[in-house]
Image (cartoon, rainbow, N blue to C red; front, side, top):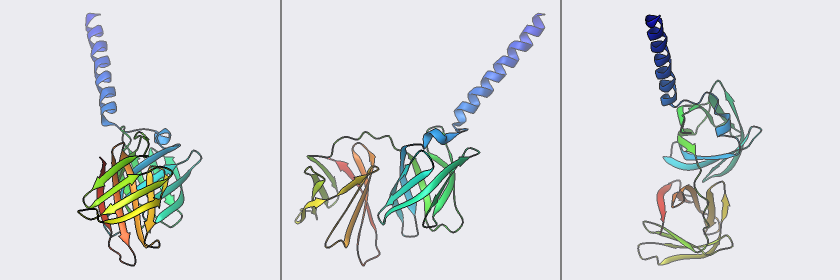
Length: 214
């Protein structure tokens, strides 16, 4: 009887270790809840280098993709522990989801020109932007309130664009100056940091940078 008890105890211990091993692996068997009514942020590459993006997932299977070029609608679904995102412009990807809500094993859908680099659930605190200043090398933004921002460029801040109207959606900021040809886009990666990128049309060069709260 003692021997049987020892064997039973050993099997229970092994089962416990096996369970712990599965948990440690971090894979989410059904990650649907990680996407419904959430925002995921990260970076993608369409051949011009890494760009920041935000994806707003809605309950019911709709998703909106935000990047420098604008907003794109699409759909999402979860099957066999994998999420598939298909956008109306033909871009999209399929990926697994880790236990800490990051995309894993990312695969581009056939015909997609946008390659997902990385993305994760963004639960950054939505602190107010009013009367705050954010800086990066040669860039300073001062949010004055009422969806307005003053921008200063250059090492001395001598080039100024005051009273710019911006749009804030899904942890992103978007605005343009110089008759809409100088485009700016930011993704809030934390309560004190933005990933930014800008482009001066008709030029094709993209200029990425990191901004932090002053």
